[in-house]
Length: 155
Image (cartoon, rainbow, N blue to C red; front, side):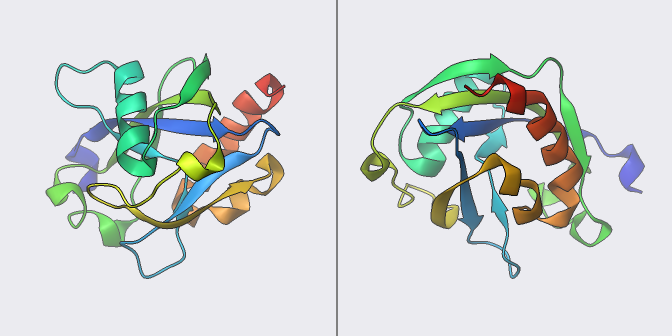
């Protein structure tokens, strides 16, 4: 009964390069081609802004970015039925996310996916217009909301 499970609290990062393209990376733990923006769980006692920088460093090897904007409120998504009970030790039905729009400040050569616990096999910069269709289907409504909200804030 997934409706009785809570959402996992986490953050998401829409990381932009100087040209306004979005960072996406391909997950290593799925059979399908699953691209996503950096995201991760909020540890107990941690505030979302701290989590965003920690997760960025854990996933892509750097925290060299500045926050441009924070999503007003939280967004949620539900896992597809076949994943409920399999991910996050079966504790959650999906994620409740605080999103940040961030500008990457370093050179591409500083991005390193070979972190302590690698999550991605490759990465690329993607035009925002191509973002939604590049993401796994169950996250597309959430990504659509992010593009609509953050898109006008990209300069």
